[in-house]
Length: 392
Length: 144
Image (cartoon, rainbow over all chains, first blue to last red; front, side):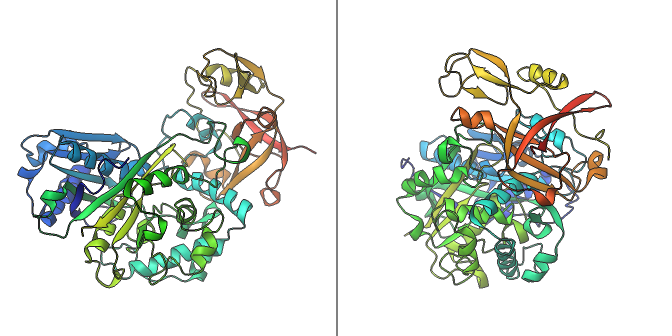
């Protein structure tokens, strides 16, 4: 899919503050982030004709946000059901809408009170009534850390991946967050701190888990031509992919002999399509913002997006390759583990800052091409990702 | 340790017969009426031959542990008195025999989680859970 390569751009990013208790509605958060993103772009509400979001029954849809803002006319909107796995697909679909002419300026937002209102997987909220939950929930298995712990254990069994390697992800990202004024967690941690943190769903500890966060983040998508007339250096949406097919229960999975292999994510199947859409490969990526709902998801995506061989994600992290100055700096803002968790969109916003060259003392020198990814697809059978590029 | 606080399965119209059989202490899988492929969970179509014809077949109920999680946190208040609790993912033997993969979640009886390993042979047992509504859980114990 190369039909919209470099035809659209991200021209604005906006955030609310991140907290554990915003004290306001998701509508208020959405409106604040959308206005901040428009301001960053040098645009106004009058310029907006498209709005898009993803949610799982926990937020405010475009058809409420648009009239709240007084958007004159919405010509395209997307109210995508789904969690982090669809986050980058939402922006990709906005790019398609702009490239097709369905809309001229689309704001993609995610607004959640993920700590004070709707904690994912508990406590107290009943599991979602989805097709396969009935076979898991009676065993007390339904929360995201449990799902990822099952895959992490399989990876440890198959490849000898260690707790210390997961810990290196957490420690490195916390050091990155120390340079990010927006980050919720900025105090450095050591590997010993990591190893001393309490078990949540073994093999995952507290410091393996992202921060349940109240907040919103938004990005503005428009055409490349229009982007070139705007305030900031355009960041082109160079490639995108989304999709899926497998699940725990599909049978005939992607593993050896048709088995379901928990150590392989949907990203492994999607990555070739993604790279082809942008005409680049893993070696061209200067900085990667990899969906880090848990440390393990970083390790497995390093493999599945082709930065190292299958099973080598742990040693790759341990080598320092993903730290600042390494071959592939990862989650330069601290990621969901330390900056905050806005369900994918704050990864895109950080990639934009890196490509604009405005990331301050966490800037990756000379960054021209960035990968930003969604939840790699254990729980729902899909994922999505974007390749962004600094306009030449 | 009481199981009364366990979430009840949200049966759907495809799965109701499967849960009814579990309450009668039978483990069923579907079998495609055309290509003979077994499948679980219950669903309307074979994703290989796309046949809509199927029958229920009684499973031998033996498998091997693929992966597991030891939960140190109760994610629902009703599970608080069970912490720490282990959840296993079991690969049914019959799946492998049919070039397929039948995975079941479950918990362990008569076994210490510290001794878990990939490939551990297990067999299904049934535990009736009182309360409202009453249900039955498929659980797993080591085959000796």
